[in-house]
Length: 123
Image 1 (cartoon, rainbow, N blue to C red):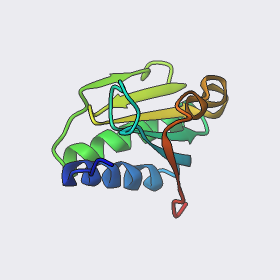
Image 2: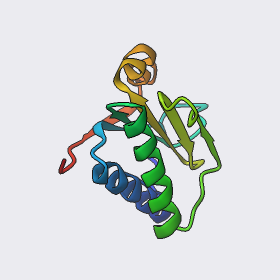
Image 3: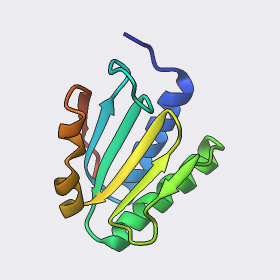
Image 4: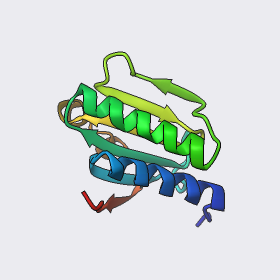
């Protein structure tokens, strides 16, 4: 089993804190390290209740990570319609969905071999 490095741990903790701050729901971490040919080590998946909420979650994540860890995302997609925003930090990719889009794409099932951790936030 591969060990996470401290930078990745800090990044994940910062992302989770940001999601909690704006009350993102149904938060899960998918550990992809044991799966061959993956593009990153972790997916963090959460749901927002509207376009505005999805945008707010994405914005606060980028703000917190930039401020705390001094990292900018390598790539961001989906900010225009805010139904599914993907924030790529290379080792960690964050997916912020509206509920119906998350259910439609069902990433958790697509990556069913990943070790999944459900995160209980303070909301």
